[in-house]
Image (cartoon, rainbow, N blue to C red; front, side, top):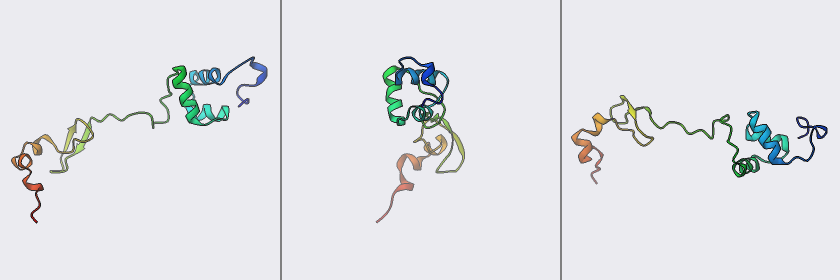
Length: 108
């Protein structure tokens, strides 16, 4: 912990102060937790409590844009999907068979 912040340079300092300073330097939760000798969850909760923005590095906190080109499960053509569950293109969705669900029926 004190490699980067030696006691000689600090007066009375708290985890919150160190977290805020390291966050301003662009450090992520893992780096801050390792420096302080605590776990990442503690740092995440501390950042939330102190209203310190999370670092965008790391990727797992970033949400992917659900709007992207996807391959239609019916015809195989690419189409611009509006959300994760949209897997059938508008052309196939407009077909009569899709509207009546005939090609999905199973005869027993």
